[in-house]
Length: 100
Image (tube, rainbow, N blue to C red):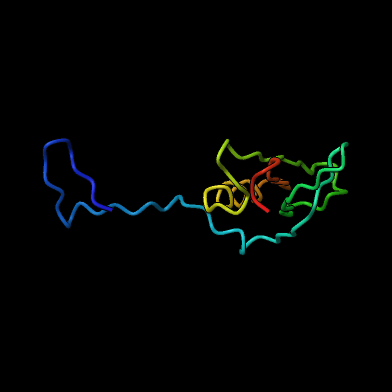
């Protein structure tokens, strides 16, 4: 990725690497699950195990919901879920009409 100030031409030695990009969800224990709403609608979801066992008193869970045009399959959603899974268990789901 080349970065330059407005009006300046980017130079090859201006390359900056983003070292904060989370690892893909494949690096985290991921399980595909189906959630069922109170009116019977089935929603695709993913469970990413956190660093602590669910029965551990210090275990925390996070629910991740995508934006209007999103899906749990999108790389951005997977990166966010994976980053959060380093600290807590994560359940990410697709809203009605999105994803699978």
